[in-house]
Length: 210
Image 1 (tube, rainbow, N blue to C red):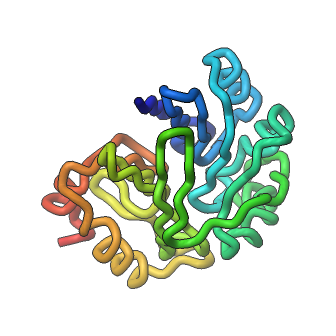
Image 2 (cartoon, rainbow, N blue to C red; image 1 turned 90 degrees about the vertical axis):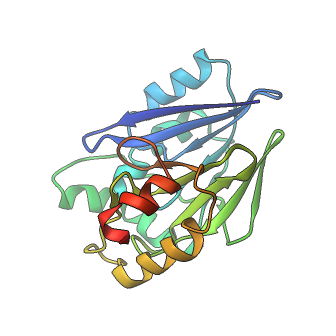
């Protein structure tokens, strides 16, 4: 009923996720991190019906492929939390600060908020507002399949950095404790970098959460 592909892309190997409802073919891209043309080709070749482009946040390494993806699919809306919109408008400038170049992404068309439900065919993605790593950060939860796309909030053995503008370490820890660690242990955490993990594993072994 669900198909999930993880694609580590770009110089920071940022995870882009392709999520498809197998019953309908409707597909979302979560964080088109880099190589937008190759990503668009993969969607077309795979027979995906792209209907949503979802952003966990707007750090440049998560939106580096957005401009090219929108060029290929101009009618598909981009969803973002409004608190992240300004950062999205500065993505190319962010990249230059780190010595990289990207095509400035367009503005998002749709706003996300805590409690929203994204309908993707027969799938229902719940929106969690999860700031702390970046302003306007959100995560996407699929309770039926025990999966959360956590962006840069929680990683295998680590947490999101908070030394960039908009970062807040205390807030991030509070968000993880209140919104992620309350999920079932078997919940798969699909993060913005690195390998998948589970809530149970991170609860027991993550050194930042002890």
